[in-house]
Structure formats: C-alpha cells, structure tokens
Amino acid sequence: MDYYQPVEISVLSAQDLDSVNFLFRPTVYVSVSVTRGSRDQQVTPAAACGKKLLRWNYRMKFYIEDDKVQRNESVFVFQIKCKRFFGSDQVVGKLFVPGCRLGVWGNIRHEPSAPCEDDIYA
Image (cartoon, rainbow, N blue to C red; front, side):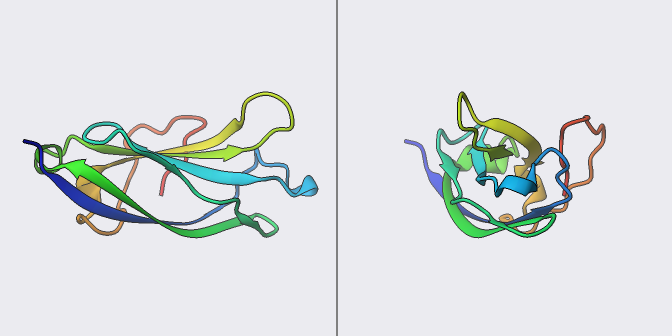
C-alpha cells in the first residue's frame, strides 16, 4: 500500500521575462507537475500583469508518494506558459526544483549547476 505525503506550494511571481509581449496584455499562467511520485498537474489562473512583473500568489497542494519523498526522487517542474490565439500555448520559461530543495520541505533554495538558455531559476 502506498502512502502519500501532502506538499503545499505557493507560486508567487516572475519578473524580467523578455519572451512575453506585455504590449497586448497576454494571458500568462504556470503549469506545475511532479516528475516522480505524483501524476498530478495543476495550473494557476492568469497572472496579474505589471510592466515586467507577473503575479499569481496561488497555492497548490500535491500528494507525493512517501518513499519518493524520503529518497529525494521527486522533481517539481514549473512551466510558465503564454496563451496563444491559434495553436498550442508557448512555453516562455521553465524551472526544475528537486524536492529535497524544498524544506517539507519549505522554501526554494535552488542554485543552478548548468543553466540552460531558456530555463529560469530561482
């Protein structure tokens, strides 16, 4: 029998996203998923847009398998997406946070080891 541990995450804000066109008031949201231990994927409502700052202040709750938490196998994937009029939504930023970096886990303390061109790190 699998036991699940609740993990609560708050998606607060993002800034300095050059690939988002702020001229036409875009609909920008964050899709959050967990790579191992949960099949759940959740999305935030549309962000409140500032000049170069997007704010969500949205709380999510995931249930992750207890053995994956104890072995630090879970990775949270945050994808910042912009809705398009036609076709699929455009991914404008990504963030990968190992579960062990959340102090259950707690605040994100993530320092990238090998930054990618289109990835965003906290």
